[in-house]
Image 1 (cartoon, rainbow, N blue to C red):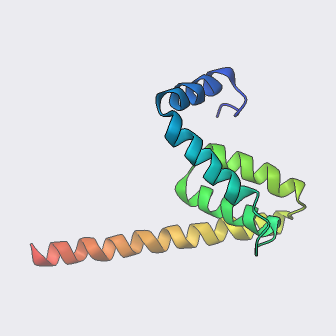
Image 2 (cartoon, one colour):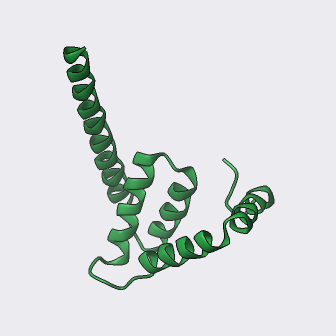
Length: 109
């Protein structure tokens, strides 16, 4: 995986933002408001949640970003592993749910 600071990656970001500047600005503002919010969840929990979602959605850039940030916030290896396993359980449960829908379509066909 190329690192987020890779010049080619940065160029793709610039191309996307230039192609859709209003939407890009809106998304960045939204992302920053969520990431920097000092609301109900402590930063450590927000990062563990972000890791679990990133793992489930298989986003290598989000995994890298949030794992590094979470480690800076002092998460343990055990906390990281538990977040990953929660993501795995949810992802496999969702797969099963889609499998049930598939069986229903088969039954009706």
